[in-house]
Image (cartoon, rainbow, N blue to C red; front, top):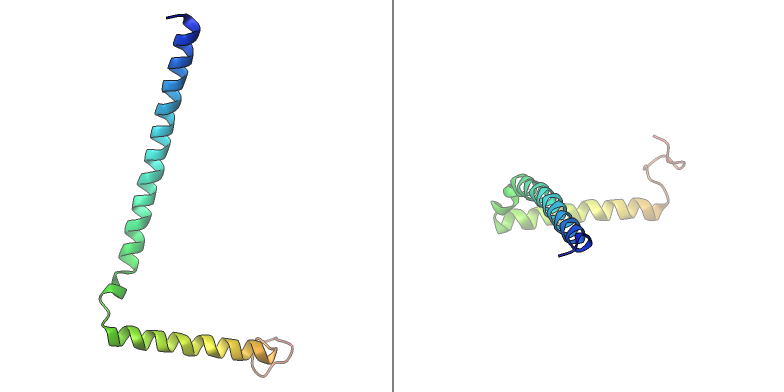
Length: 84
């Protein structure tokens, strides 16, 4: 095997190893982030259907109120210029 072929093969293998290490670290970070999200949202899994329905109803009311204020042309009720 010539020196040029050996050098290219070594560089190729080193590149593969570098990508493996880099992606392994990224996947570890992703796994940690997934675990954190699962821990923060675990309370949703424990909710009953009635609690979920109540939560969604309250959310819809909030969205409707925001849309009504935006449709009125002011972001703060009672203040036409939007100042608080």
